[in-house]
Image 1 (cartoon, one colour):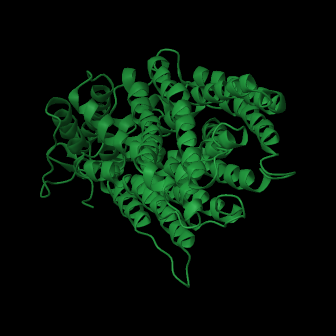
Image 2 (image 1 turned 180 degrees about the horizontal axis):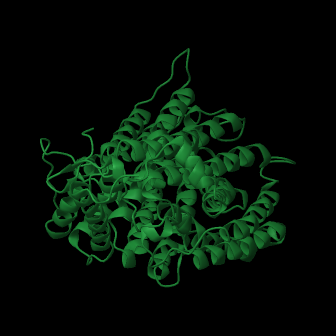
Length: 550
Protein backbone atom coordinates (compact mmCIF):
# COMPACT_ATOMS: atom_id res chain seq x y z
CA UNK A 1 0.00 0.00 0.00
CA UNK A 2 1.29 3.48 -0.83
CA UNK A 3 2.66 5.71 1.90
CA UNK A 4 0.15 8.46 2.57
CA UNK A 5 2.89 10.60 4.10
CA UNK A 6 4.31 11.31 0.63
CA UNK A 7 3.48 15.03 0.07
CA UNK A 8 3.23 14.74 -3.72
CA UNK A 9 0.90 11.76 -3.41
CA UNK A 10 -1.26 13.56 -0.88
CA UNK A 11 -1.41 16.48 -3.26
CA UNK A 12 -2.59 14.10 -6.00
CA UNK A 13 -5.22 12.61 -3.72
CA UNK A 14 -6.55 16.07 -2.95
CA UNK A 15 -6.72 16.77 -6.68
CA UNK A 16 -8.59 13.53 -7.18
CA UNK A 17 -11.21 14.50 -4.62
CA UNK A 18 -11.37 18.00 -6.10
CA UNK A 19 -12.05 16.51 -9.53
CA UNK A 20 -14.82 14.33 -8.11
CA UNK A 21 -16.36 17.36 -6.41
CA UNK A 22 -16.06 19.34 -9.60
CA UNK A 23 -17.95 16.64 -11.49
CA UNK A 24 -20.80 16.60 -9.00
CA UNK A 25 -20.99 20.39 -8.97
CA UNK A 26 -21.16 20.45 -12.77
CA UNK A 27 -23.94 17.86 -12.83
CA UNK A 28 -25.86 19.83 -10.21
CA UNK A 29 -25.52 22.92 -12.42
CA UNK A 30 -27.16 21.06 -15.33
CA UNK A 31 -29.85 19.51 -13.11
CA UNK A 32 -30.82 22.85 -11.54
CA UNK A 33 -30.47 25.06 -14.63
CA UNK A 34 -33.23 27.53 -15.42
CA UNK A 35 -35.27 26.84 -18.54
CA UNK A 36 -33.56 28.65 -21.42
CA UNK A 37 -33.56 29.12 -25.17
CA UNK A 38 -30.98 26.35 -25.42
CA UNK A 39 -33.50 23.86 -23.97
CA UNK A 40 -36.02 25.03 -26.60
CA UNK A 41 -33.40 24.54 -29.31
CA UNK A 42 -32.68 20.98 -28.15
CA UNK A 43 -36.40 20.14 -28.22
CA UNK A 44 -36.82 21.64 -31.69
CA UNK A 45 -33.73 19.99 -33.20
CA UNK A 46 -34.59 16.59 -31.74
CA UNK A 47 -38.33 17.02 -32.38
CA UNK A 48 -37.92 17.70 -36.10
CA UNK A 49 -36.27 14.31 -36.38
CA UNK A 50 -39.24 12.60 -34.76
CA UNK A 51 -41.62 14.58 -36.96
CA UNK A 52 -39.74 13.22 -39.98
CA UNK A 53 -39.63 9.70 -38.55
CA UNK A 54 -43.38 9.56 -37.95
CA UNK A 55 -44.19 11.10 -41.33
CA UNK A 56 -42.03 8.54 -43.13
CA UNK A 57 -43.33 5.59 -41.10
CA UNK A 58 -47.04 6.35 -41.28
CA UNK A 59 -47.18 7.84 -44.78
CA UNK A 60 -47.01 4.27 -46.06
CA UNK A 61 -50.38 3.60 -44.39
CA UNK A 62 -52.16 5.48 -47.20
CA UNK A 63 -49.36 5.38 -49.78
CA UNK A 64 -49.54 1.56 -49.85
CA UNK A 65 -53.17 1.81 -50.95
CA UNK A 66 -52.16 4.25 -53.69
CA UNK A 67 -49.28 2.03 -54.80
CA UNK A 68 -51.69 -0.91 -54.92
CA UNK A 69 -54.00 0.94 -57.31
CA UNK A 70 -51.09 1.43 -59.72
CA UNK A 71 -48.90 -1.65 -59.31
CA UNK A 72 -51.16 -4.14 -57.57
CA UNK A 73 -53.07 -7.16 -58.81
CA UNK A 74 -56.27 -6.38 -60.73
CA UNK A 75 -59.36 -8.38 -59.75
CA UNK A 76 -62.29 -8.25 -62.22
CA UNK A 77 -64.83 -5.69 -61.06
CA UNK A 78 -62.54 -4.35 -58.29
CA UNK A 79 -59.74 -1.83 -58.02
CA UNK A 80 -56.19 -3.18 -58.06
CA UNK A 81 -54.37 -3.65 -54.76
CA UNK A 82 -51.14 -5.11 -53.42
CA UNK A 83 -51.21 -8.77 -52.51
CA UNK A 84 -50.64 -9.81 -48.90
CA UNK A 85 -46.88 -10.29 -49.26
CA UNK A 86 -46.35 -7.01 -51.11
CA UNK A 87 -48.36 -5.04 -48.56
CA UNK A 88 -46.47 -6.73 -45.73
CA UNK A 89 -43.11 -6.06 -47.38
CA UNK A 90 -43.53 -2.30 -47.80
CA UNK A 91 -44.98 -1.92 -44.29
CA UNK A 92 -42.61 -4.17 -42.34
CA UNK A 93 -39.36 -3.14 -44.05
CA UNK A 94 -39.09 0.10 -42.07
CA UNK A 95 -39.64 -1.47 -38.61
CA UNK A 96 -37.01 -4.13 -39.44
CA UNK A 97 -34.54 -1.42 -40.43
CA UNK A 98 -35.50 0.63 -37.39
CA UNK A 99 -34.71 -2.30 -35.08
CA UNK A 100 -31.23 -2.60 -36.61
CA UNK A 101 -30.67 1.17 -36.40
CA UNK A 102 -31.73 1.37 -32.75
CA UNK A 103 -29.27 -1.29 -31.67
CA UNK A 104 -26.44 -0.01 -33.90
CA UNK A 105 -26.71 3.72 -33.21
CA UNK A 106 -27.56 3.14 -29.55
CA UNK A 107 -24.22 1.39 -29.13
CA UNK A 108 -22.28 3.82 -31.35
CA UNK A 109 -23.57 6.83 -29.42
CA UNK A 110 -22.12 5.39 -26.21
CA UNK A 111 -18.81 4.55 -27.89
CA UNK A 112 -18.18 7.44 -30.30
CA UNK A 113 -20.39 10.15 -28.84
CA UNK A 114 -23.87 11.54 -29.21
CA UNK A 115 -22.69 14.51 -31.31
CA UNK A 116 -20.69 12.41 -33.78
CA UNK A 117 -23.67 10.20 -34.57
CA UNK A 118 -26.33 12.93 -34.48
CA UNK A 119 -27.03 13.95 -38.04
CA UNK A 120 -25.61 10.78 -39.59
CA UNK A 121 -28.89 8.98 -39.04
CA UNK A 122 -30.79 11.97 -40.46
CA UNK A 123 -28.73 11.85 -43.66
CA UNK A 124 -29.65 8.18 -44.05
CA UNK A 125 -33.34 9.08 -43.63
CA UNK A 126 -33.14 11.87 -46.23
CA UNK A 127 -31.43 9.69 -48.83
CA UNK A 128 -33.75 6.73 -48.20
CA UNK A 129 -36.88 8.88 -48.41
CA UNK A 130 -35.88 10.69 -51.59
CA UNK A 131 -34.85 7.42 -53.24
CA UNK A 132 -38.30 5.94 -52.62
CA UNK A 133 -39.95 8.80 -54.47
CA UNK A 134 -37.73 8.07 -57.48
CA UNK A 135 -38.10 4.29 -57.38
CA UNK A 136 -38.97 2.27 -60.45
CA UNK A 137 -38.94 -1.38 -61.41
CA UNK A 138 -37.56 -3.43 -64.27
CA UNK A 139 -37.59 -7.00 -65.52
CA UNK A 140 -35.21 -8.22 -62.80
CA UNK A 141 -36.55 -6.32 -59.76
CA UNK A 142 -40.10 -5.07 -59.22
CA UNK A 143 -40.78 -1.61 -57.87
CA UNK A 144 -42.12 -3.21 -54.69
CA UNK A 145 -38.75 -4.90 -54.15
CA UNK A 146 -36.94 -1.58 -54.68
CA UNK A 147 -39.26 0.16 -52.22
CA UNK A 148 -38.67 -2.56 -49.61
CA UNK A 149 -34.89 -2.06 -49.84
CA UNK A 150 -35.06 1.73 -49.56
CA UNK A 151 -37.60 1.60 -46.74
CA UNK A 152 -35.31 -0.77 -44.85
CA UNK A 153 -32.35 1.61 -45.24
CA UNK A 154 -34.53 4.55 -44.24
CA UNK A 155 -35.58 2.54 -41.19
CA UNK A 156 -31.96 2.22 -40.07
CA UNK A 157 -31.74 6.02 -39.95
CA UNK A 158 -35.07 6.30 -38.16
CA UNK A 159 -33.89 3.74 -35.62
CA UNK A 160 -30.82 5.81 -34.83
CA UNK A 161 -33.01 8.80 -34.00
CA UNK A 162 -34.65 7.08 -31.02
CA UNK A 163 -31.69 6.53 -28.66
CA UNK A 164 -29.84 9.65 -29.84
CA UNK A 165 -32.73 12.10 -29.41
CA UNK A 166 -33.82 10.55 -26.11
CA UNK A 167 -30.31 10.59 -24.67
CA UNK A 168 -29.41 14.09 -25.84
CA UNK A 169 -32.66 15.62 -24.58
CA UNK A 170 -32.44 13.85 -21.20
CA UNK A 171 -28.75 14.66 -20.62
CA UNK A 172 -29.20 18.38 -21.38
CA UNK A 173 -32.45 18.76 -19.40
CA UNK A 174 -32.72 20.03 -15.85
CA UNK A 175 -34.34 17.58 -13.47
CA UNK A 176 -37.65 19.37 -12.92
CA UNK A 177 -38.45 19.72 -16.66
CA UNK A 178 -36.78 16.59 -18.07
CA UNK A 179 -40.05 14.73 -18.55
CA UNK A 180 -41.67 17.64 -20.39
CA UNK A 181 -38.62 18.16 -22.60
CA UNK A 182 -38.54 14.52 -23.63
CA UNK A 183 -42.32 14.46 -24.11
CA UNK A 184 -42.15 17.57 -26.30
CA UNK A 185 -39.54 15.84 -28.46
CA UNK A 186 -41.57 12.65 -28.74
CA UNK A 187 -44.86 14.52 -29.29
CA UNK A 188 -43.51 15.63 -32.66
CA UNK A 189 -44.34 12.09 -33.72
CA UNK A 190 -48.04 12.96 -33.50
CA UNK A 191 -47.60 16.00 -35.74
CA UNK A 192 -45.61 13.91 -38.21
CA UNK A 193 -48.40 11.35 -38.34
CA UNK A 194 -50.96 14.12 -38.82
CA UNK A 195 -48.87 15.78 -41.54
CA UNK A 196 -48.59 12.51 -43.47
CA UNK A 197 -52.37 12.13 -43.50
CA UNK A 198 -52.98 15.81 -44.25
CA UNK A 199 -50.57 15.80 -47.20
CA UNK A 200 -52.23 12.63 -48.48
CA UNK A 201 -55.63 14.33 -48.23
CA UNK A 202 -54.43 17.50 -49.99
CA UNK A 203 -52.77 15.52 -52.78
CA UNK A 204 -55.90 13.38 -53.22
CA UNK A 205 -58.15 16.44 -53.51
CA UNK A 206 -55.69 18.18 -55.83
CA UNK A 207 -55.67 15.21 -58.21
CA UNK A 208 -59.44 14.65 -57.99
CA UNK A 209 -60.28 15.65 -61.57
CA UNK A 210 -57.26 13.81 -62.96
CA UNK A 211 -58.36 10.62 -61.19
CA UNK A 212 -62.07 10.55 -61.99
CA UNK A 213 -61.53 11.61 -65.62
CA UNK A 214 -58.89 8.96 -66.28
CA UNK A 215 -60.57 6.52 -68.70
CA UNK A 216 -58.13 3.71 -68.01
CA UNK A 217 -59.06 1.95 -64.77
CA UNK A 218 -56.09 -0.42 -64.96
CA UNK A 219 -53.44 2.27 -65.29
CA UNK A 220 -54.16 5.10 -62.87
CA UNK A 221 -51.09 7.08 -63.82
CA UNK A 222 -52.00 10.14 -61.79
CA UNK A 223 -52.05 8.11 -58.57
CA UNK A 224 -48.46 7.16 -59.39
CA UNK A 225 -47.61 10.85 -58.99
CA UNK A 226 -49.60 11.07 -55.78
CA UNK A 227 -47.80 8.48 -53.67
CA UNK A 228 -44.41 9.73 -54.83
CA UNK A 229 -45.30 13.27 -53.74
CA UNK A 230 -46.63 12.05 -50.38
CA UNK A 231 -43.49 10.02 -49.58
CA UNK A 232 -40.97 12.41 -51.16
CA UNK A 233 -42.09 15.42 -49.13
CA UNK A 234 -40.96 13.56 -46.01
CA UNK A 235 -37.32 14.48 -46.64
CA UNK A 236 -37.90 18.26 -46.46
CA UNK A 237 -38.06 18.67 -42.63
CA UNK A 238 -34.98 16.44 -42.34
CA UNK A 239 -33.02 18.68 -44.70
CA UNK A 240 -34.07 21.75 -42.69
CA UNK A 241 -32.88 20.17 -39.40
CA UNK A 242 -29.62 18.66 -40.68
CA UNK A 243 -27.37 21.70 -40.04
CA UNK A 244 -28.59 22.03 -36.46
CA UNK A 245 -28.10 18.31 -35.83
CA UNK A 246 -24.50 18.50 -37.01
CA UNK A 247 -23.67 21.57 -34.90
CA UNK A 248 -25.32 20.66 -31.59
CA UNK A 249 -22.77 20.38 -28.74
CA UNK A 250 -21.72 17.13 -27.16
CA UNK A 251 -23.59 16.42 -23.93
CA UNK A 252 -21.57 17.25 -20.80
CA UNK A 253 -22.36 13.87 -19.31
CA UNK A 254 -20.74 12.04 -22.24
CA UNK A 255 -17.68 14.30 -22.01
CA UNK A 256 -17.48 13.75 -18.26
CA UNK A 257 -18.30 10.08 -17.79
CA UNK A 258 -17.25 8.45 -21.06
CA UNK A 259 -14.49 10.69 -22.40
CA UNK A 260 -13.63 11.30 -18.71
CA UNK A 261 -12.70 14.91 -19.48
CA UNK A 262 -14.27 16.71 -16.53
CA UNK A 263 -12.48 20.01 -17.11
CA UNK A 264 -13.77 20.28 -20.67
CA UNK A 265 -17.29 19.23 -19.62
CA UNK A 266 -17.36 21.99 -17.00
CA UNK A 267 -16.38 24.58 -19.61
CA UNK A 268 -19.04 23.20 -22.00
CA UNK A 269 -21.73 23.52 -19.33
CA UNK A 270 -20.83 27.12 -18.60
CA UNK A 271 -20.92 27.99 -22.29
CA UNK A 272 -24.13 26.13 -23.13
CA UNK A 273 -26.09 27.43 -20.16
CA UNK A 274 -24.99 31.05 -20.58
CA UNK A 275 -24.61 31.63 -24.32
CA UNK A 276 -25.92 28.38 -25.85
CA UNK A 277 -22.55 27.79 -27.53
CA UNK A 278 -19.41 25.82 -26.78
CA UNK A 279 -15.77 25.91 -27.82
CA UNK A 280 -13.28 23.10 -28.13
CA UNK A 281 -9.53 23.66 -28.38
CA UNK A 282 -8.07 20.71 -30.31
CA UNK A 283 -4.60 21.47 -28.90
CA UNK A 284 -5.66 21.58 -25.27
CA UNK A 285 -4.11 19.06 -22.90
CA UNK A 286 -6.72 16.41 -22.12
CA UNK A 287 -6.95 15.34 -18.47
CA UNK A 288 -8.63 11.96 -18.13
CA UNK A 289 -10.25 11.14 -14.82
CA UNK A 290 -10.55 7.54 -13.73
CA UNK A 291 -14.20 6.45 -13.70
CA UNK A 292 -16.21 3.30 -14.51
CA UNK A 293 -15.79 2.43 -18.18
CA UNK A 294 -18.05 0.49 -20.51
CA UNK A 295 -17.00 -3.04 -21.41
CA UNK A 296 -18.72 -6.37 -21.90
CA UNK A 297 -17.56 -7.48 -18.47
CA UNK A 298 -18.84 -4.27 -16.86
CA UNK A 299 -22.11 -4.51 -18.85
CA UNK A 300 -22.70 -8.04 -17.56
CA UNK A 301 -21.77 -7.05 -14.03
CA UNK A 302 -24.07 -4.03 -14.00
CA UNK A 303 -27.12 -5.60 -15.64
CA UNK A 304 -26.45 -8.94 -13.96
CA UNK A 305 -27.67 -7.38 -10.73
CA UNK A 306 -31.42 -7.93 -10.37
CA UNK A 307 -32.13 -4.31 -9.43
CA UNK A 308 -30.59 -3.21 -12.75
CA UNK A 309 -31.50 -6.13 -14.99
CA UNK A 310 -35.19 -5.96 -14.07
CA UNK A 311 -35.31 -2.32 -15.13
CA UNK A 312 -33.90 -3.14 -18.57
CA UNK A 313 -36.32 -6.05 -18.97
CA UNK A 314 -39.30 -4.00 -17.73
CA UNK A 315 -38.52 -1.10 -20.06
CA UNK A 316 -37.90 -3.40 -23.04
CA UNK A 317 -40.95 -5.62 -22.59
CA UNK A 318 -43.29 -2.69 -21.89
CA UNK A 319 -42.21 -1.14 -25.19
CA UNK A 320 -42.57 -4.50 -26.97
CA UNK A 321 -46.13 -4.97 -25.71
CA UNK A 322 -47.15 -1.39 -26.49
CA UNK A 323 -45.79 -1.41 -30.05
CA UNK A 324 -47.67 -4.58 -30.90
CA UNK A 325 -50.83 -2.50 -30.52
CA UNK A 326 -49.48 0.88 -31.61
CA UNK A 327 -48.16 -0.32 -34.96
CA UNK A 328 -50.72 -3.07 -35.35
CA UNK A 329 -53.29 -0.27 -35.50
CA UNK A 330 -51.18 2.59 -36.84
CA UNK A 331 -50.00 0.82 -40.00
CA UNK A 332 -53.37 -0.77 -40.68
CA UNK A 333 -55.93 1.86 -39.74
CA UNK A 334 -56.92 2.23 -43.40
CA UNK A 335 -57.70 -1.49 -43.58
CA UNK A 336 -59.71 -1.40 -40.36
CA UNK A 337 -61.67 1.69 -41.41
CA UNK A 338 -62.53 0.07 -44.74
CA UNK A 339 -63.44 -3.18 -43.00
CA UNK A 340 -66.12 -1.43 -40.93
CA UNK A 341 -67.36 0.42 -44.02
CA UNK A 342 -65.97 3.80 -42.95
CA UNK A 343 -63.62 4.32 -45.89
CA UNK A 344 -64.93 2.23 -48.77
CA UNK A 345 -66.96 3.70 -51.62
CA UNK A 346 -69.66 1.95 -53.68
CA UNK A 347 -68.96 4.20 -56.67
CA UNK A 348 -67.67 2.41 -59.76
CA UNK A 349 -64.30 2.81 -61.49
CA UNK A 350 -61.92 5.64 -60.78
CA UNK A 351 -64.57 7.69 -58.97
CA UNK A 352 -64.72 4.92 -56.37
CA UNK A 353 -60.92 4.96 -56.12
CA UNK A 354 -60.92 8.69 -55.43
CA UNK A 355 -63.75 8.52 -52.89
CA UNK A 356 -62.12 5.60 -51.06
CA UNK A 357 -58.81 7.48 -50.77
CA UNK A 358 -60.66 10.63 -49.72
CA UNK A 359 -62.66 8.82 -47.03
CA UNK A 360 -59.64 6.94 -45.66
CA UNK A 361 -57.71 10.22 -45.38
CA UNK A 362 -60.60 11.88 -43.56
CA UNK A 363 -60.93 8.91 -41.20
CA UNK A 364 -57.22 9.00 -40.36
CA UNK A 365 -57.35 12.76 -39.82
CA UNK A 366 -60.16 12.27 -37.34
CA UNK A 367 -58.21 9.57 -35.49
CA UNK A 368 -55.10 11.75 -35.40
CA UNK A 369 -56.80 14.94 -34.22
CA UNK A 370 -59.16 13.23 -31.79
CA UNK A 371 -56.73 10.80 -30.25
CA UNK A 372 -53.06 10.84 -31.19
CA UNK A 373 -52.10 14.51 -30.84
CA UNK A 374 -54.15 15.32 -27.67
CA UNK A 375 -52.72 12.25 -25.96
CA UNK A 376 -49.13 13.46 -26.32
CA UNK A 377 -49.85 16.89 -24.93
CA UNK A 378 -51.92 15.70 -21.99
CA UNK A 379 -48.88 13.57 -21.12
CA UNK A 380 -46.80 16.74 -21.41
CA UNK A 381 -48.96 18.42 -18.79
CA UNK A 382 -48.79 15.61 -16.22
CA UNK A 383 -45.48 13.82 -16.85
CA UNK A 384 -43.43 15.76 -14.27
CA UNK A 385 -46.16 16.02 -11.63
CA UNK A 386 -48.05 12.74 -11.77
CA UNK A 387 -45.04 10.73 -12.89
CA UNK A 388 -44.10 8.25 -15.60
CA UNK A 389 -45.05 5.01 -13.90
CA UNK A 390 -48.65 5.95 -12.92
CA UNK A 391 -49.31 7.23 -16.45
CA UNK A 392 -47.96 4.03 -17.98
CA UNK A 393 -49.98 1.82 -15.64
CA UNK A 394 -53.14 3.82 -16.25
CA UNK A 395 -52.60 3.68 -20.00
CA UNK A 396 -52.15 -0.09 -20.12
CA UNK A 397 -55.25 -0.60 -17.96
CA UNK A 398 -57.44 1.60 -20.18
CA UNK A 399 -56.04 0.04 -23.37
CA UNK A 400 -56.79 -3.44 -22.08
CA UNK A 401 -60.39 -2.37 -21.51
CA UNK A 402 -60.89 -0.64 -24.88
CA UNK A 403 -59.41 -3.52 -26.86
CA UNK A 404 -61.61 -6.02 -24.99
CA UNK A 405 -64.71 -3.96 -25.86
CA UNK A 406 -63.72 -3.43 -29.52
CA UNK A 407 -62.78 -7.07 -29.94
CA UNK A 408 -65.61 -8.91 -28.21
CA UNK A 409 -68.33 -6.45 -29.28
CA UNK A 410 -66.98 -5.96 -32.81
CA UNK A 411 -69.90 -7.56 -34.66
CA UNK A 412 -72.53 -5.64 -32.70
CA UNK A 413 -70.69 -2.34 -33.02
CA UNK A 414 -70.19 -2.60 -36.78
CA UNK A 415 -73.73 -3.78 -37.53
CA UNK A 416 -75.24 -0.28 -37.54
CA UNK A 417 -74.25 3.28 -38.32
CA UNK A 418 -74.45 4.27 -34.66
CA UNK A 419 -72.34 1.27 -33.72
CA UNK A 420 -69.72 2.16 -36.32
CA UNK A 421 -69.51 5.66 -34.91
CA UNK A 422 -69.09 4.16 -31.43
CA UNK A 423 -66.32 1.92 -32.76
CA UNK A 424 -64.51 4.91 -34.29
CA UNK A 425 -64.87 6.74 -30.95
CA UNK A 426 -63.33 3.78 -29.10
CA UNK A 427 -60.61 3.61 -31.73
CA UNK A 428 -59.79 7.30 -31.19
CA UNK A 429 -59.91 6.77 -27.41
CA UNK A 430 -57.41 3.95 -27.81
CA UNK A 431 -55.08 6.27 -29.72
CA UNK A 432 -55.46 8.88 -26.99
CA UNK A 433 -54.53 6.53 -24.14
CA UNK A 434 -51.65 5.05 -26.10
CA UNK A 435 -50.06 8.49 -26.09
CA UNK A 436 -51.37 9.62 -22.71
CA UNK A 437 -49.89 6.38 -21.54
CA UNK A 438 -47.21 3.87 -22.49
CA UNK A 439 -46.32 5.15 -25.96
CA UNK A 440 -44.85 8.28 -24.35
CA UNK A 441 -43.51 6.80 -21.15
CA UNK A 442 -41.78 3.83 -22.79
CA UNK A 443 -39.73 6.39 -24.73
CA UNK A 444 -38.91 8.52 -21.68
CA UNK A 445 -38.05 5.95 -19.01
CA UNK A 446 -35.20 4.17 -20.89
CA UNK A 447 -33.60 7.58 -21.50
CA UNK A 448 -33.39 8.16 -17.74
CA UNK A 449 -32.76 4.94 -15.83
CA UNK A 450 -29.38 3.75 -17.12
CA UNK A 451 -25.89 5.13 -16.32
CA UNK A 452 -24.32 7.47 -18.87
CA UNK A 453 -22.00 4.82 -20.31
CA UNK A 454 -25.01 2.60 -21.14
CA UNK A 455 -27.81 5.14 -21.48
CA UNK A 456 -27.97 5.15 -25.27
CA UNK A 457 -27.31 1.41 -25.51
CA UNK A 458 -30.04 0.65 -22.97
CA UNK A 459 -32.49 2.92 -24.75
CA UNK A 460 -31.57 1.29 -28.06
CA UNK A 461 -32.23 -2.18 -26.65
CA UNK A 462 -35.59 -1.08 -25.24
CA UNK A 463 -36.60 0.68 -28.45
CA UNK A 464 -35.50 -2.31 -30.55
CA UNK A 465 -37.73 -4.51 -28.41
CA UNK A 466 -40.57 -2.19 -29.32
CA UNK A 467 -39.80 -2.50 -33.02
CA UNK A 468 -39.71 -6.27 -32.61
CA UNK A 469 -43.28 -5.89 -31.34
CA UNK A 470 -44.11 -3.76 -34.38
CA UNK A 471 -42.74 -6.46 -36.69
CA UNK A 472 -44.65 -9.19 -34.86
CA UNK A 473 -47.80 -7.07 -35.07
CA UNK A 474 -47.47 -6.33 -38.77
CA UNK A 475 -46.61 -9.90 -39.76
CA UNK A 476 -49.34 -11.28 -37.52
CA UNK A 477 -51.93 -8.79 -38.76
CA UNK A 478 -51.06 -9.50 -42.39
CA UNK A 479 -51.23 -13.28 -41.96
CA UNK A 480 -54.31 -13.44 -39.74
CA UNK A 481 -56.56 -10.61 -40.91
CA UNK A 482 -58.19 -12.65 -43.69
CA UNK A 483 -58.63 -15.92 -41.80
CA UNK A 484 -62.21 -17.00 -42.45
CA UNK A 485 -62.70 -14.37 -45.17
CA UNK A 486 -61.62 -10.84 -46.03
CA UNK A 487 -60.94 -8.93 -42.78
CA UNK A 488 -62.95 -11.49 -40.80
CA UNK A 489 -60.26 -12.01 -38.15
CA UNK A 490 -60.04 -8.34 -37.10
CA UNK A 491 -62.11 -8.79 -33.88
CA UNK A 492 -59.83 -11.63 -32.74
CA UNK A 493 -56.74 -9.51 -33.50
CA UNK A 494 -58.16 -6.83 -31.23
CA UNK A 495 -58.67 -9.44 -28.50
CA UNK A 496 -55.03 -10.54 -28.86
CA UNK A 497 -53.93 -6.92 -28.51
CA UNK A 498 -55.93 -6.73 -25.28
CA UNK A 499 -53.88 -9.62 -23.89
CA UNK A 500 -50.58 -7.87 -24.64
CA UNK A 501 -51.84 -4.69 -22.99
CA UNK A 502 -52.60 -6.76 -19.91
CA UNK A 503 -49.04 -8.11 -19.80
CA UNK A 504 -47.75 -4.52 -20.09
CA UNK A 505 -49.31 -3.76 -16.70
CA UNK A 506 -47.08 -6.33 -15.01
CA UNK A 507 -43.87 -5.31 -16.82
CA UNK A 508 -44.47 -1.70 -15.76
CA UNK A 509 -44.17 -2.79 -12.13
CA UNK A 510 -40.47 -3.59 -12.79
CA UNK A 511 -39.45 -0.04 -13.67
CA UNK A 512 -38.89 2.75 -11.12
CA UNK A 513 -40.58 6.11 -10.92
CA UNK A 514 -38.16 8.66 -12.36
CA UNK A 515 -39.81 12.04 -11.85
CA UNK A 516 -37.78 14.76 -10.10
CA UNK A 517 -34.72 12.52 -9.72
CA UNK A 518 -31.34 13.18 -11.30
CA UNK A 519 -30.02 10.78 -13.91
CA UNK A 520 -27.19 9.84 -11.55
CA UNK A 521 -29.63 8.94 -8.74
CA UNK A 522 -31.54 6.71 -11.17
CA UNK A 523 -28.39 4.89 -12.31
CA UNK A 524 -28.20 2.83 -9.07
CA UNK A 525 -24.55 3.77 -8.69
CA UNK A 526 -23.05 5.72 -5.81
CA UNK A 527 -21.85 9.14 -6.94
CA UNK A 528 -19.63 9.68 -3.91
CA UNK A 529 -16.14 9.00 -5.17
CA UNK A 530 -17.40 8.14 -8.69
CA UNK A 531 -14.17 9.60 -10.05
CA UNK A 532 -11.50 7.40 -8.60
CA UNK A 533 -7.97 6.18 -9.09
CA UNK A 534 -5.80 3.85 -6.99
CA UNK A 535 -3.47 6.04 -4.92
CA UNK A 536 -0.33 4.19 -6.02
CA UNK A 537 -1.13 5.00 -9.65
CA UNK A 538 -1.81 8.73 -9.29
CA UNK A 539 0.04 10.93 -11.76
CA UNK A 540 0.41 14.51 -10.55
CA UNK A 541 1.27 17.65 -12.51
CA UNK A 542 0.87 21.02 -10.80
CA UNK A 543 -1.58 19.58 -8.34
CA UNK A 544 -3.93 18.02 -10.92
CA UNK A 545 -4.63 14.38 -11.61
CA UNK A 546 -3.49 13.78 -15.18
CA UNK A 547 -4.30 10.66 -17.19
CA UNK A 548 -2.66 9.48 -20.35
CA UNK A 549 -3.55 11.37 -23.49
CA UNK A 550 -5.86 9.24 -25.65
